[in-house]
Length: 83
Image (cartoon, rainbow, N blue to C red; front, side):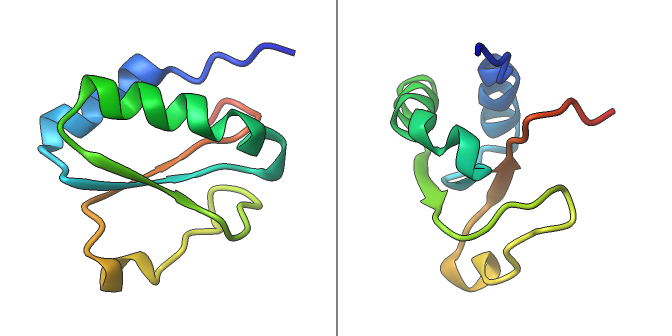
């Protein structure tokens, strides 16, 4: 199955916010694409991208510990479009 992950939209958000450290949060079903996502985001931004290895059960499952790591931006991907 192909997903439209809107990576260009993520790139634009990272660049617009001048984020230096970005965390990507993926549900388990998208984690096999993690390297591809991280490589693309890092190649089009000046940011270091890290992957959140913990859970991602929806938009309400935000890893609040990121603040302590100096993360500038969290990008959360899911299987369904959130409007």
